[in-house]
Amino acid sequence: MSYTLSVIIPCYNEKNTIAQLLDTVRQSPIDGKLEIIVVNDGSSDGVEKILESTLRSKIDILIHHPKNMGKGAALHTGIKHATGDYVIIQDSDLEYSPTEYPKLLKPLLDGNADVVYGSRFIGGDTHRVLYFWHSMGNKFLTLLSNMFTNLNLTDMETCYKVFKRQIIQSLTLQENRFGFEPEVTAHIARIPDIRIYEVGISYYGRTYKEGKKIGYKDGFRAIYCIVKYGLFYRFCRQTDFSTIPVDKI
Image 1 (tube, helix red, strand yellow):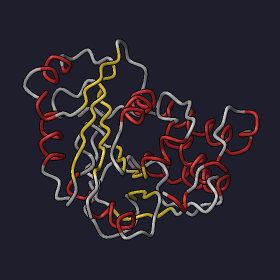
Image 2 (tube, rainbow, N blue to C red; image 1 turned 120 degrees about the horizontal axis):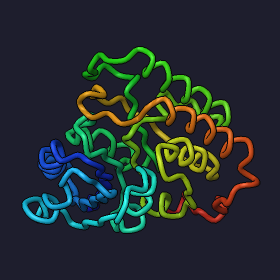
Image 3 (tube, helix red, strand yellow; image 1 turned 45 degrees about the vertical axis):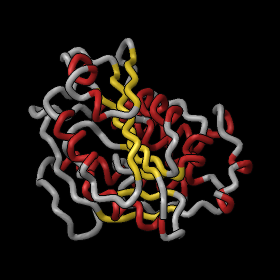
């Protein structure tokens, strides 16, 4: 089967990891083609110069935000420019392994799924042992999200989400920071007849000293977004979900 996977990489001050990440993405063992989209979100660590010089040949589409606007904003930009059959989100650190793209794509390529989430909490894959309360926070946010969406996800906050391109480009998304995760999940859950799958993935987490950026304030924002898009969605600017023909994509 011939297909193209658009890999959207939001990048903010990841000078130390972006080169290795791009090499790993380019070497991912998929049968289709890759379209690598990097959105430099107003970085101040010199990564822009590297992206424009030594790494430019490894990137298909490179976009620079003039100032830092947030991960969600970078994803909005990348999604808009994607042209592949499928779209995956890839953080520019090294916490998630592109070697697992085939596993994530399989339910889509088999014709069983429209969206696939990579879960850090199911399966027997490798996981770095890190923060207890961070893990509990992720599970609490997933539980709260599930209560509003009526899904049974195990890892709503995961980076690895793969979409059919027409689906993700059909959504009207607003959140500019880490609220992207609960917002897109709430939107996806409302599409009639949507088929959502989860697969277990490995996770090579970073410490805050190593550059991890998400913090407790982002957790509170996620709770706000879960309630906003789950309970009060009728008062938000939203997608007309009935117009998304999942069975025709």
